[in-house]
Image (cartoon, rainbow, N blue to C red):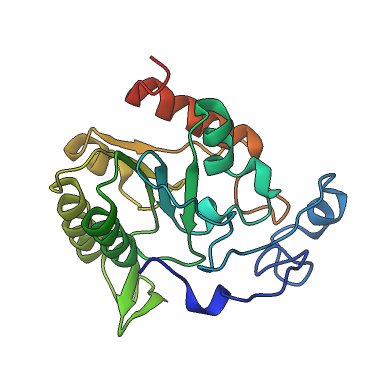
Amino acid sequence: MLKIDNRIGFEERSTMGMDSQELCVDLAHFRSYPKKVNYRYNSRGFRDHEWPEDLSDVIWCVGDSFTVGIGQPFEETWPQVLQKKTNKRCLNLGEDGCSNDTMSLRIQEINKLYNPKLIVVMWSYFNRRRVNGVNVQYDEREFSDEQDLRNFVSNYETVNSLPINVYNLTIPTPFNDEDAVKKAYPDLNFVKHLDYARDYFHFDVKTSNGICDLILKKTGLLS
């Protein structure tokens, strides 16, 4: 779980998935985006530098493409911004299209192998699933909101029952009935989408900074 096979040895490139002229949401925005974006992956297949040998005091950042930072310069992804604000090594374990099922398994493996001090997880869309070892995007014709919520709650409660410090975020608008989820799980922090990355779907550095300020406020990392 602590590697992404199809990104290992991936050749560096300047576009990726939705962050391309063919798949972006707004072509004019894509073409006028002022910052340079490159995608480089480490030997584990994550968009990050190589992991240090000593992992005893790192912050583990788990998520989907919003954590990868699709459409953003690498140094403006929220794990990199958090690293600068805390002066602690933040590992980016974001995976494009990652389901909450996979995130839960990934966090359980981190817990088993590394005795982490802090894991920050940015949960993904509730309708994604892990099927036969693969992240799959389902739609409302196949799974109801009620089923989606039950699946998320199972993953959320599994992760938060572990004897580790977990800080819970969600991507912007992961589920239709957010108010009900917020009421049931007040420790779950919903991200506000404040700006747009080059693909005009994922968020950009203003949102990254807001996320990190929220993490710092709630976790006391700078106290």
